[in-house]
Length: 316
Image (cartoon, rainbow, N blue to C red; front, side, top):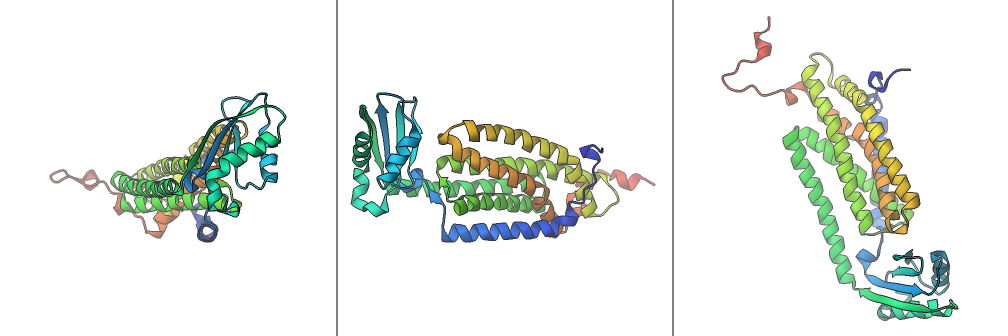
């Protein structure tokens, strides 16, 4: 059995198939985001946050059933510090009318007290207006755009403009597909998921930088060979590192997904999707863009300082 570093997989030979798959996924994601948007969480839409304390241990699943039967929609119920304290997050309930939004806290308490034999006390109740939610949504979007701009600037100075375009297109690919999956599945999108999206940008960029560094090194070291062959060699040389890093990261993320509780469930879900898509894009998308832009050895040649003779010119 060959070691991973000795493999000779023709990644770029399948680049058109990969490009077709990516194009379909990106288009479907954009269509879903335009038509359905995402299921904005309480952090963005505004809504009511209620913290309730029970005299005995309580099961959040039972509370969810009670609230669902009472007509509430898209709410989140989770433990808050102990098995007796519960936090209920409820976005605006359009079917109840806009005036009812400020009274949702009272309605929730009434429903919970009527459905429980013991003592149910209110610890806190707060209403977050939609103006705050809009501001958070706008700032989150600007944050992602700024992150992409800074990535493009960094990679341009670190490598070359063609590498920069490849990295940004790969990151755009990862973010759009991750958002698209949340949109299609109608999963709740809150600030923890936004944090996961920003973390995906950093993770995917790290993978892309490693691959790009090896591509640049091989372009300067290998004197003969077509760009597509050099890129294939570079991808095979970094494949082991890419797969091991992704696998160990996913082990931690799956632990958070299954054992971390509902509070970070969305965060773990977003990162799992992002790591899988980011691993794929670091192999196919960024490298394919370099070939489309006709990357050559001249683009990566080390500039010769004035007055210093090129060592290659001194060789017979």
